[in-house]
Length: 313
Image (cartoon, rainbow, N blue to C red; front, side, top):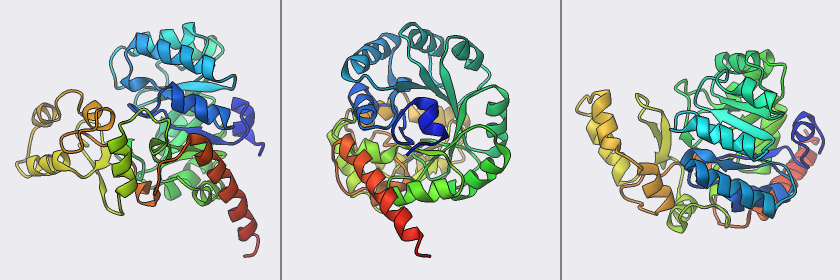
């Protein structure tokens, strides 16, 4: 399955595992890379030395390419970038910030750079900044999302029309059929997050994984746009946010209510009531927890079967 993305990253399949906070440690990243995709370490939830530890363990667990995802809305980003360079990681995905901030430095150190965007405008800014590829992430995606609320099926063809560099689709993709649909619309590859949350190797708490499996249509919602828009499962904490909005809160009120380490509390520690449980709308199609290698295999097999079926039309 060769195309611009497989050649860019030297991988077998154009499948990228999203670098999700509290989910994407070395076990998941190495398992996906060993299966022919591209695994990413989610640096946003790691202290600098913890990131170094995960990079070293990932190197020991795979001889295949892997990368680091660095969301620029978290603290100590300079340290995370420097450690990534020091440890010789050759692929970095940046998100939630200005692509000009680190792209030149990373490329000077021989690193392939990809930036995550939620609109055509930001895709073009990323291309102008010199990134090697763009992830266009639709409104369906879990975790921190764009304010535009543009869905993946709308966003991908609009970005494709304007972009010259390789395009990766993200948001609402957990099956081979979804992968084929995204690529028919113009994507060169797909980034998959929520499906890999419900994997054996994901570093999130089992209780959170189980809640993802049990989620149905309509069980997630995008909120907290005044801070950093985030899609999460509806729980006691989410309902308290809804109640707070009814009082016309200030930004400071929202910050105070969110508090510290809310995502860690939910996804990593398993507090299903008061934690922030970040997941995408596609959770309604995720019905089991299985090894990452099986997830990659399922994606590829379903993609190939769907492609054959599509020929009939």
